[in-house]
Length: 339
Image (cartoon, rainbow, N blue to C red; front, side):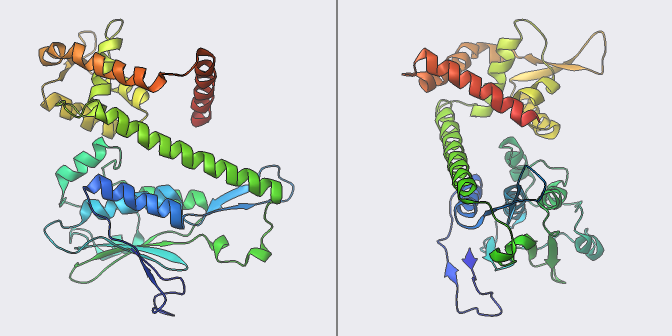
């Protein structure tokens, strides 16, 4: 990753190279996004006349950058020594991976930058793994997601480039135009609003850090298990809910808060591992319930114990009155997320 504060063409001698990021693919994606969040993504608050709520925009929407980064790591050639390369310009971000787009995608489709449907996936198994981690949705949805998130933020559309030999792929994500305008030309929030915004940002950073820490902590409870932590929580959910009702894929979508394609991939992996199976309802064969296998029933107590131990460890030392406040806050956050 390299930053060119004055532009790589206008003044390439002024640049900053950042340390290379190494590790597994999920680790590299996470570290890359942390660097973007901490160093490059900025928010601007603009007061709108005759409107109570201020307009909040970002120079680069986080979700669009994340989708582009995941795309680059997903589609690069891991038999090559060429890494994913990111260049930060004053007016855009360029993300490059090698090699380029498959030849089944026409130059016209690339220029339109709407949706790339390839006949060949270079790293199909990696894609399935990224789906399980909720880093990718599949179904060629990456490019539409990038464009949608940029549109929501009021940013220009992303552009895609490759050479004739398809040796490299570059995505150019433009900065929001408001961040190219002199700050004096924009009505900014007053001191109180700035302080409030800074506090909110700090809270979000603390929440994000805590969330990642909790995920790592929970994963530790399944580190010596054949199951991943997300497989464990899914099986635990089915174990508990099966005592009173049948469970269907739609229930997992609501429970996990993820889309159908990710749930389907998760179910497929558990089915292939012999932990559950799909059974059609006698009353309506179109609906398939999820049934635990004997293999899962044999380790059922172990799964329940691991999840219980994790939950117990998270609430140790917290007074009852604080837990009631926590429950109230979580309930309100859930309502906010549904708006």
